[in-house]
Image (cartoon, rainbow, N blue to C red; front, side, top):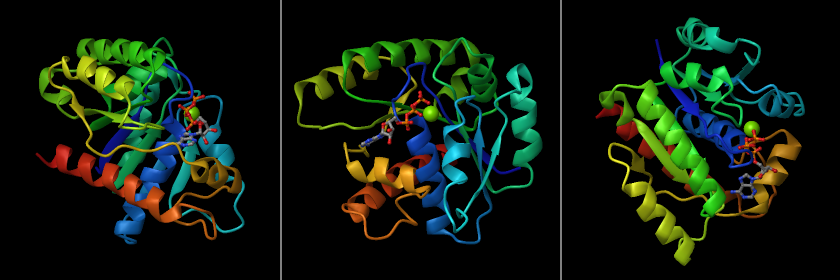
Length: 221
Ligand SMILES: Nc1ncnc2c1ncn2[C@@H]1O[C@H](COP(=O)(O)OP(=O)(O)OP(=O)(O)O)[C@@H](O)[C@H]1O
Ligand SMILES: [Mg+2]
C-alpha cells in the first residue's frame, strides 16, 4: 500500500483543499510515473468540484468519500492499495467523524494554519485530538504548515513558538505565502503545476515542492 497523507484542521478556510490539490500535483510533477489519488472527505466537495472544471484531466485521480463517516479509514486503505500516494482533503471539523477516521489511517497528517490567533486556537485543538487518536510514534509524522503567512510578522513568531511547545509535532520550514495564484488556479480547475500564464506560478511551485519534500523526508525517518 502507498503512503497516505491527510490534510486536516478543525477551522475552515486554512488551505486544506488548496494544499491537498497542489501537493498531489507536486508529487506527480517530481515523478510522472507515480499513481496519486486525492480523496475528498469533505461534503463541501471542493476538490471534486475543482477536478470537474478542467478540459485537460488533472495528473491525479479524485474521488469523494465524504459520506463514509467512521468507515472512512477502511475505505481510504481499500483505495490506497492501488496508488503510490493517497492524499485526503478533510472537512473543517474535528467533530465530523471523517477527520478522526482519516487521521487514524494516515502515515502523515498535514495541518495548515495561518498566523492568526483563531487559526492557532483551532490548531491547538487539532493537535490535542491527534494526541488522543494516535500513538506517540505516529504523532511524529504530524506536521504543521503555515499557509498565507508572512514570516516577518510578530504574530508568526509568537504562534510558531506556541505550537512548538507541543512535543512530537514538527513545524515545516517551508511556508506558503498569500498568493492570488492559488485562488486563480483553483477556479481554473488547475494546480500551480499544470496552470500556465498565471503570475507567481514559479514561486508557488517552489513553496509547494518544499512542503512535499519535507513531508516525504519526515515519513521516511
Ligand atoms: N496561500 C494562499 N494564498 C491565497 N489564497 C489562498 C491560499 N491558500 C488558500 N487560499 C484561498 O483561500 C480559500 C480557502 O482555501 P481552501 O478552500 O483551500 O481552505 P480549506 O481549509 O480547504 O477550507 P474548508 O475548511 O472550507 O474546507 C480559497 O479561496 C483558496 O483559494
Ligand atoms: Mg476544503
